[in-house]
Figure 1 (cartoon, rainbow, N blue to C red):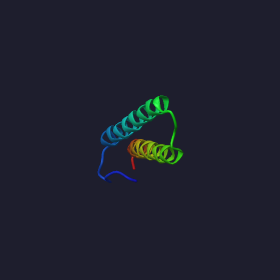
Figure 2: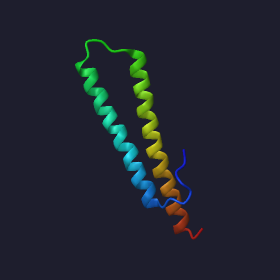
Figure 3: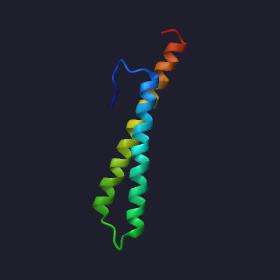
Figure 4: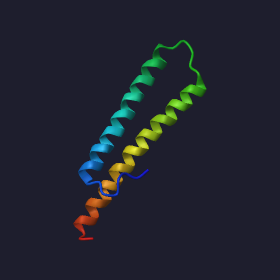
Length: 77
């Protein structure tokens, strides 16, 4: 997943922060649900963990893209 090719590093870092905040919120919610549950549905837990991984991956990709743009600008490319 790549952000808009015209996005600035600032835009990308804001987007990365947003994705990572979603990931953190979902992790906290899942943790609370597991602590309160009498039983855990492993299939649903697996799906929730995959969703958290996807949100985290999106944030990391945005941050990496911002880093790449900043590096290219610094090198005069």
